[in-house]
Image 1 (cartoon, helix red, strand yellow):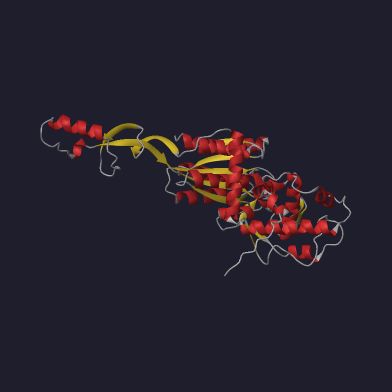
Image 2: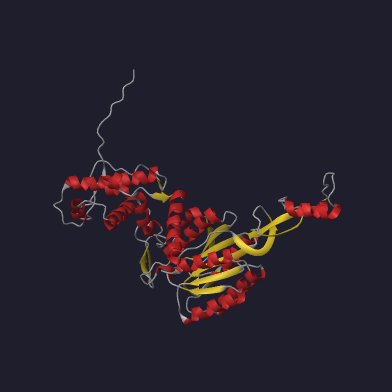
Length: 430
């Protein structure tokens, strides 16, 4: 005979914490634009890339900051974290255990994965105050890296999309509306004669009316002919292929402002919107620095800027080639940048760079790629994160050639501008 023993439930601090709210507070850390290439020194922009943002220790420090901002710690914990406590080892151990439990919960719920080992580092107490000697637990945490999963990226995309749409106001979701009509289930216009290939969504009253007008009413059965058939028409719904071009040149993290992280947040929001509301659409992401590269959406969280120039021409070329393979009614490029084109790829594969000004060789090749996009029917909408006069002139020229739009925005309003433009194009198809 089996017996079940029940014991009194003893609550833990983690049971009272809202993990989703913490993930929201961690979004800036998880999507940090950073600086690629590790520790790097350049005479113009100095030291970059010193911190290891993907280590378990960095994640714990970010969690501590999020917990402080959320106000979900006890007064004793807050005093220890601020260095105002009495150095109570029990409280410090409680904080360390809480961090380990939070990370384990993030792993269990599928938001992150760990490269090696588990989040718990037994044996010593972590120095949560940042004072004193770094212990073995913290040293061990530095050897374990974490990675965002697709679920984690999708959650951040959902939160970003919700925040962007709430800032814009109410927005109706739907497929791309066009002035064309097609046969479908939802009737929204007058019926039409049936043609081979149409969906057989019969307009019965109109069909019977045709048959009666042709043969009249009598006692016999009503014979239908091919020409009598009438079908309902519905609005034709188009699909759109989008390539999001992200500038990863060094200027995107210069001057004390991270411009790349907001751009990644917009990309995740667009990906979530397309997946949930417009499943017939597609979204690809291209980064362009010295060279242009397509990156999977699943790797977007790890993307960083680097000591690169801005090869806009190669980015447009790669984006156009990706869109060429997409059999969609609409094809567009959304380009996010903050600087002038300063590099082009030569026919022999070498990269020619000039950061001094708007080089005519670089400009001409860039404008040729813009013209090629227009010829291929690809719309280019440019979102410029700077307002220097020479950049305004360059962007206006791009928009004139491509018949697209130019938006001069900031990191605070970038997402709102992109989402409003994207939704507007979905509601009204030219």
